[in-house]
Length: 244
Image (cartoon, rainbow, N blue to C red; front, side, top):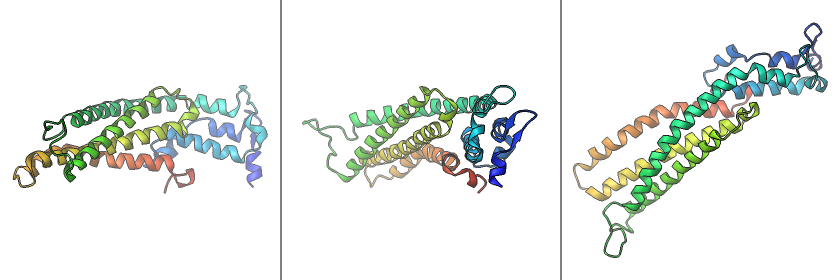
C-alpha cells in the first residue's frame, strides 16, 4: 500500500504525490491545532514525511511547468514564510529592547551595590548571605539578558531560507524567549534582596515595597508563560502528535 502511494502520479498535470503536498499550505489542518505556533516548520515536517515514502525518482522529477517538488513548495509557501518571518522579527525586536533594559539595570546594580562601599572600596554588606543572593542573581540576570540579545542578533542576521524555519529559527526564538524569562525572574530576585539589604528584615515597609516592585514582573511572567509553553510544544512535538 505504501509503495502504491509513493508511486502515485498525475499524468495530466505531471504532478507526483510530492508535488501535490507542496502545492499549498494546509491552512485548515494547521489552524485546527491550537498548539501550532511555528506553522512553516509544520509544513516542512509534512513535506519531509511524504518525501520519505515516495519513489526517489519523483523527488527530482519536474511537472508540466518544469518544477521539481521542492521548487513548488518554496513558491507556494512564500507568503506563509514571509508572514512568519515578520512575526519572528517582531518578537526578536521587542524582546531585544526589554533584554537590553534588563542588562542595563543589572549592570548598574553591580556597580552601585546596595549599602554602598567602605573606605577600602568593598561593599558594606560583602560576605552576607542576602548580599550573595543579590550579587549572584544580578550577575546571572545580566548574563541571561545578554544571551537574549545575542541570540536574537543571530535571528536578525539569518537569511530566512525555507529550511531555516525547520529547526534553526524556532530554536533561536525559544532560546531567546527562555533566557529573557529567566533574566526577568533573576532581576526580580535581585530587586527583592536589595530591598532586604537596604531596609532590613524588620522594616514594616519592606513587604509592600517588594510586592509593588515585583507585581509587574509577576504579571509579565503569568502572561508570557502560556505562550512560551505553547511555542515549546509546537516546536518539539512530532508531526504525528500535532493534535495531541
